[in-house]
Length: 234
Ligand code: ADP
Ligand code: MG
Image 1 (cartoon, rainbow, N blue to C red):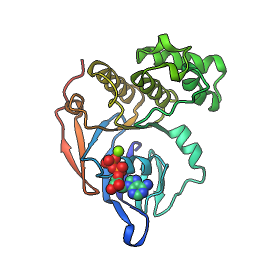
Image 2: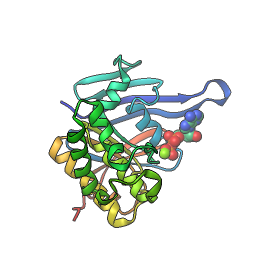
Image 3: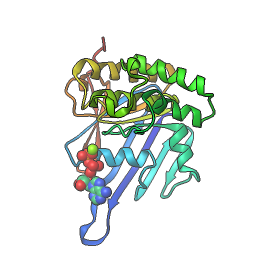
């Protein structure tokens, strides 16, 4: 069974009087091919949860499984966290973090090249996704020449290009207009279906919340599962 399983994950920032318990025992399951929404007020621990799952920060306790591998059980069980992040996880951050001295296509082509694709193969894959996200015509531009929404779509292409089995998206549509926000959600749903990707989307975007079949609400560091509308995406 692949997908994502999170069991009783806790995260405390700092120690002593100033410690913050950001996650107080989170449970969550995402099946392969499923796109799940994660909602909750500001400061409720959404980004902290994605960063733990994405091996960007270390939880304080709990257990996390990606695909067939238990990656964390009261400590990391994977010796090479960089390889885990590169090969298994597509992370879409709230800010795009593009590499300023590479053009748009190379920003996206870099990961497949690092994973062994030839230059030409990697650029073809990159351009396909950039086209699908309506930024193919900006392939030769430098990141600084793009609008915020264009940069975000390039960052989304980069997160998807290696077809990782898990995608973690932190407010991916925040800088986008509603048509482009829906295009992003459509692509994420296509990825999920076509490649059995398990996807978590953190959002407070009212336009996209009705598209999820299943949601988790996080409040005060704990999750509750909710049924969503699962509205069709046209
Ligand atoms: P959300 O993404 O839901 O807005 P976060 O996960 O960013 O919430 O934050 C959850 C809680 O953890 C907040 O109280 C926040 O202030 C705190 N927090 C986040 N990052 C850190 C950090 N690096 N050090 C200390 N506290 C942090
Ligand atoms: Mg956040």
